[in-house]
Length: 277
Image (cartoon, rainbow, N blue to C red; front, side, top):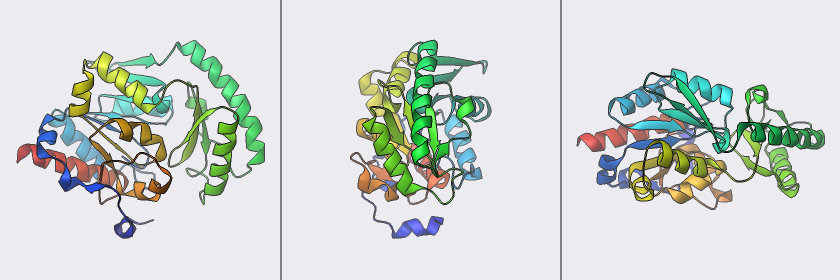
């Protein structure tokens, strides 16, 4: 779908121009999904990289919150102007010290989570026999806690019907499974993107619950972002979220006109121009 196609979609959220400019003045953190929120069509647009650098230069800390693997997130934390990465759907926070060394903080004991991952992988592998178009994500070897099933990353055309059926089967097995824009992510119970985000904001940055509500904005593109949309008053969906809204209970309050990383850049421009007005 091209960027121009999104202008014809029905938007259920408010335009960025509806955001109170005072809220932009108070903003200290932007938490963001990665795939199809910072990227678009599988790549990181130059507009996104420029936006990340401008936000950092203006004192706004950006923390990707992704279902992507820990190996990929390690690279993000090292190479991009971000303050750390919440990875594998909330399983781990890869933080960055002042001298740019990385620290790993797991939701629970790492060895316990690795053992649970092995059990989940066995169940998922057995189930995938029923869904020949689906496959384990190519980055599975670089995951520390969860299992990812590819339905739209390297599977072309996207196997949407199979994804829906597989997701239902996983939930029927009692597994904790959620769909992103490219994967089904299957992980242990007890945490999600919001749970780890709240822990990080509290323990690593010292924000109270009230401060989190006032100083943090979340931006995403898919159903696995619902826990964030439900909790943060300042929540934004990039334009491509429109195709998922009909199956989502919790929608972003605001929405960009551009998709993916182009929408993220649009949001960054709005925030920074509002702060300098």
